[in-house]
Amino acid sequence: MPRRVLLLVNPNKPAAVAAATEVRALIERHAVLLAELPADSTPLPESAKEADLIVVLGGDGTLLAQCRRCVGLTAPLLGVNLGRLGFLAEFDQTALRDQAPALFGGAELTKESLRAMGVEVFGARHRTARFVGMAINDAAITAGPPFRLISLSLSIDGQRGPSLVGDGLIVSTALGSTAYNLSAGGPILSPRVDAFAVTPIAAHSLSFRPVVVSGDSRIEIRVERANADDSHGTTLVLDGQSTTRLEAGDRIVVLRHALGVRLVQNTRSDYWARLISKLNWATTPRLNG
Image (tube, rainbow, N blue to C red):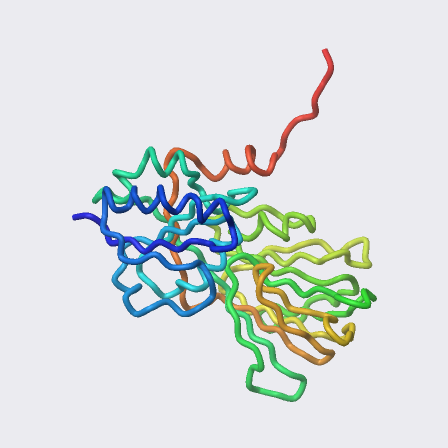
């Protein structure tokens, strides 16, 4: 039976808008196009629950945003890369064109479940969270203007950990370990590992190393000293997209989110090959002679 497909197109990417014509035709040739909508942050219509597959045209950032938007839906997401990197969005237009009969027809899809993280912020004297969010890749606490060192204290599963003086801290999922976490010197985790990586950002210490903790862990970060600025200051950033200001005394709690999302995998590619081709993982030096 042909699949019912929801098409989400990033209206701010000319390449995605241009590609939509061909992708729309591919879907209509092999499946049923349920609707074509902009890939933005507005709530999806009730009819989205009827979709068997959600195709996202954009880049990795677009796909991340739509993963959060589609959390709780049963349909998996298929990312078509029309951005710069295309690590998370595994298909390009050529791959989509070549595999369209299988992807949009009745063939079994290879899917990967993503473990999202839930993030809550509590004020110094409040038991009710003043901010509740979700991240697919990571939650980062950044110093912000005027860019003085901030101070954070860390606890994991109720056990007190170290204090951090530096530019901030990243908590990433396994999937997000190849994003900001990687740039900050954190470990690469296989996406099949149920774990969080906790990585300092420019710690003023010779011995504050990143750690990997169970995906069941409760991670709590207390802001001991923050930067204040009229427009920015110390900030919590989710997936590099959603932000909220932080103040001294705030507590940030990170847990596994109750809901998740699934991505369609390109069976003609694999994770480790993309690490090498897209991120130049473990490439050897160029030697003369």
